[in-house]
Length: 237
Ligand code: CA
View (tube, protein in one colour):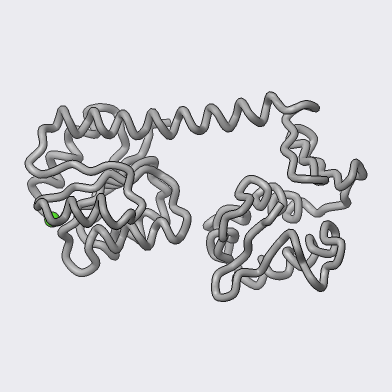
């Protein structure tokens, strides 16, 4: 499947040039012309890379980057900057972008940077895969006394198999894979249940409650699946 790149740029000529050149390289290109549109498309299409201009009508590229990172959007973000003071903001503020390019740039340089970022993602993915498959007992992921056998879709606690519904299994696996990270209910819902799932975030709360009853020594005072006030949940281990 071709990798998808979301191009966020309001200048029609540059938008077109970028799309044309990226498509010629075999990428699938999505276009957004302003910040709101960028957020909506990034959430909906899950691109493999985001090419993000800073100067945009309405919400600017820096805000878009911040918002997406807060939502745990993990694909690389390559910023397009036009002025020196913008570079300072991108580099200095740690807004969560991966790289930047200053306008005017050559298409060759842009394609090289895009390729480098996508390769990096691929390397990380491969490393993670290796860690999983190298674990003892066929594809097992561990966190303290929890062991997840992904081949058999089975989770054990202190060696005893936990009776889990499919969604509880998926949710606990998701928590273990994202150990230590704050996960919003919306993000969990989208990733575990799928974005097409019509439900509300209480679905997550209910499943967390069930999981706590199964894995917490004291479910009333959870020490493993922590509620982050105003945020969501964090799996401590
Ligand atoms: Ca612009």
